[in-house]
Amino acid sequence: MSAAPPGAPPPGPRVERPAPTIRVRHLSHRFGSLDVLRDVTFDVGPGEIFGFIGPNGAGKTTTIRVMATLLEPMAGRVEIDGVDVTIDPAAVRRSIGYMPDHAGVYDRITVREYLEFFADAFRVPSLDVVDAVLELTDLGKIQDRIVATMSKGMKQRLQLGRILLHDPKVLILDEPASDLDPRARIEIRDLLLELRSLGKTIFLSSHILTELSDVCTSIGILEKGRLVVAGPIGEIAARLEAVRAAQAHGHAPPRHAAAPAGYAAPAAHVHDAPPPYEPGAPPPGAAAGPLPAAAPPPGYGPHPPHAAAPASAGQAAAYPALSPLLSRRKVKVRVLGEPEAAAYLLRGGPGIADVAIVAGAVHVGYIGNDVKIAEIVQHLVRSGIGVIGVEPERNELERIFLEVTQGEVQ
Image (cartoon, rainbow, N blue to C red; front, side):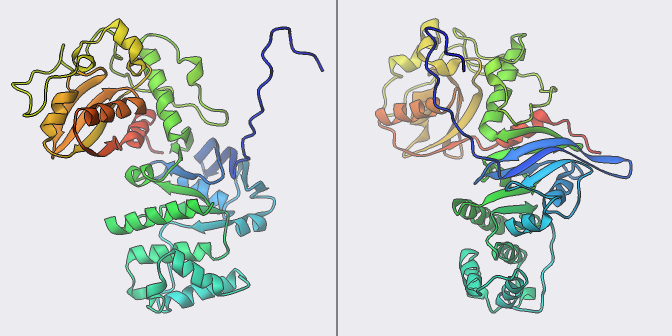
């Protein structure tokens, strides 16, 4: 073993990543002459909610059927909790709970009878587990109701209860919120978050981005049978921002923005981005100086010096959030009293691109990251404005999807 060179820093502690609960490598499949999956590779870590996104026909259900041991891959390897789905499918079935799209239920029995039937089929040693599942899924109050009389949302809850009876480690759900009304979608979302808190790893397929953005920790986007990108949502968004900024400057993507090991890189066809913010110039979409105001709101003085001064090189150094590698974002701020006062105090501030009042809330466009949101809130509170709510932009997943896909189907 060779010694470290003189002056070299001591080696740091080795960070061990937990083994992925779901491991897919070079998965390919075809039906006739149609390649429905082409060299798909991704990991899902323990305790994650992984959103599998793609248009109809992209290959999502085929991937799920392979993971659920219902279809053998023509090429590649899939492991669930370290077990190959083709070598020991029985062991895989014991560790997964699979809920297919539009699965039927037995209509002419009660909720309890339905769960007791499947508990017996799973050879669950005690029927006490049925009571636990009824409580977890909030079906205890209707356990004596005939299944045929239940709503679609309640039937989906019953399906989730069925796959939980044998306490699987991994849940594989194909479009679990399909055709549900808004209340039922919210209830399913909350149940998924509760299941994750219990240590379940959840693989969730959907083409409804809004239902995934609230629950998923990581995503994979599939298009025409190919995995376009996969990984934590925040890391993907940051990498795309870096690619856009580098392309706008005519450079290759910076080295530090590379995707984490084990994740696919974004597609090469990232759309052109608007020119990034340059220190010393107003943010994109902003006026050359602070926005004019006829008069300050009653009881409020002018902008403090640090908020009214135009951008400068010194200001850029003091506010690293103006870096061109960071994105332009929006945040909705709800305040006590008149929102015009808050808007007046924010206009023209460093890194503030635009300020508008919509439906009683202050919508702020800014250049930066979460630190900038904290600065906005801190500035308002110090100025005597009561902040009662801050909601970051919620369409990050939609933006990523539109940016890395081309809208093609096979």
